[in-house]
Image: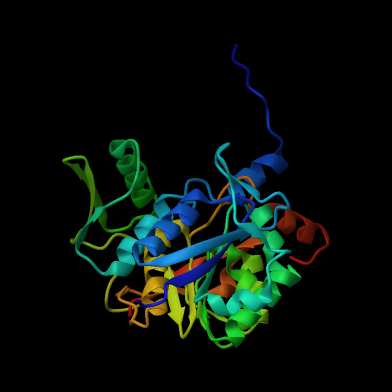
Length: 212
Length: 125
């Protein structure tokens, strides 16, 4: 009997239910077991849109890097922005992602959590929810923004938004099983960074300083 | 009891600078984007939503504000997206040349903090 596949899911403490449950369902339907960890000490996380809480398998702080070899993929799932941003510069998450990369596993993230995997995205094409801060971090890391809903480049699978969860998780499952990604996007969007607009407050401040 | 609260010019400037009705909707933007990316002429939107009529109305409003060539129908409790043809409206996609369409975007929800907003230029491939 073939050994079962395993995926590690790092989830925001105020999680996006569509991303979490949607991706777990797809993974399990494709024969991939999951282990879910988060930053919360008591392992209890909450749906960002409601009171539903759940207990995860463990904490990021207690994760043993030696166990990476037993996983085939890592998924980082977002939620409320503040809690998701807490992953961006977390040293333990960085170490975990880099270990997954060193062992040539599938590395994936969705929406606002994509900057959490920027450490291994140099030269890679990625999708992420279009926050300016995310663009800044990903560019610094040498990643290339594609503005597509789902992007896969070698072992990196990223998605822009929660609506693409099924396609994102399916792509990850296919790569875990050594298959080609079947999801095809016929039409490409492009992003023009030179015309991004500042928030009104910043514009007012710059006007007062005579900068614009 | 109804009350009208006057807003200052600064507040008004902030409100208007946020782009009015042309915002990137949390539900509409990803759905429309994925439909356009698929290249399909027509698609059934399979989505968990309590009221498909309301969802269809939200999508129609977004499409109208952004002038996309898409029609939204609700048939047999299913939401159907259809690419329409005809005279291109301002901002409509054409295969001959890239169209410069900018979209003001707003925060996804109250917790999103952004230093600025990115805008998109749509490109035909």
